[in-house]
Amino acid sequence: MSQEKVAEFVKAVAEKKDLNQKVAAAEKTTTAWVQLGKQAGFDFSKDDFVGFVKQVTGSAVTEKDAVSTLIGGGEMNDTQLEAVSGGAGFAALSFSPAIMTRMGGAFNLGNINASFVKTSGPEFVKSSGGGQFGGGII
Image (cartoon, rainbow, N blue to C red):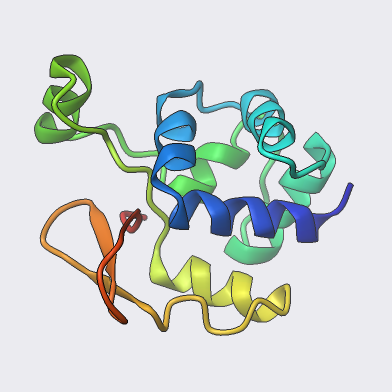
């Protein structure tokens, strides 16, 4: 029920591969993201989501374009499409380091980029040792 819950959801999407996969495969609509957030335990409204995107991007957005603004609106590249269609992997949904930094500061989440290192692929690897997390394209 707040923009803070949206921030926590976006952080979880960046950190948890299974949630990242669900969100990456979902429709890129505010309605779909609100539903996925609720399923994952983050209760927020469409207005909360739009307000969050406005705050972290500095863009004037509407319900219709909030998701594409947050994730950069780009289409999947050939490698990502092959991974999804072939079932060999997953197309990571990613957020820019700038978005994550603004989000961390605005919502008291600390420096949430500090423990992630960009690899050559569409995923981040936690620098303090090991686990892979969906991450970084905007």
